[in-house]
Length: 96
Image (cartoon, rainbow, N blue to C red; front, top):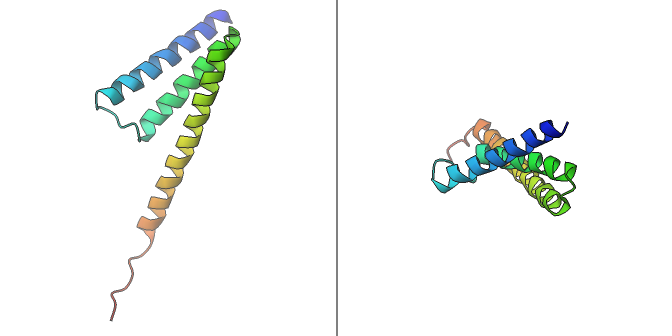
């Protein structure tokens, strides 16, 4: 089990570093769904790793980080749904 947790933690760290590098280099938008998914996934896996090793400050940090990710993902999904609804509405008829 310890090896599995180590793999999860390492993967989470790699994912967070990759996302950060992509945003920092301008190859990915911080406002986009891909970055937010990577950010959430990395934080969640590091939270699991930290909690397993009783590294509570890090586990709590990554719990909050994951919560922010869930909140941001929810906003992005809601914004996309609203945009799709508006795009599907018929255009108003021209005035008199």
